[in-house]
Image 1 (tube, rainbow, N blue to C red):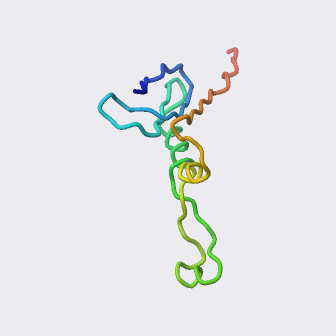
Image 2: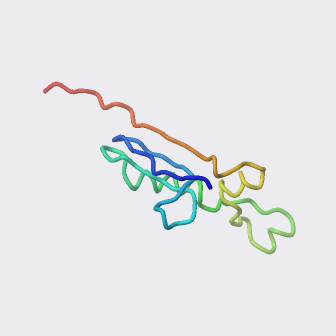
Length: 103
């Protein structure tokens, strides 16, 4: 049985990983932020890129049925369709150090 752990977060770090939000949940894609600059709106931006349906252009008969655009799969679903193992998904990004100002 695979063990999922909650990663420890440093300030200013934004992370995406596959795991459990707590021990009672099923494994899923999770978003985490470390405070000190990184916050919930940054995690929401990451979620909107990976988990929101993407707009696709319709051609031919699809255009008559759906109009010029339709909602397609998410980036995560697209990776799964292409044969990638989502349970290995990890992304971490740190904020740049803030310049020191002398006053």
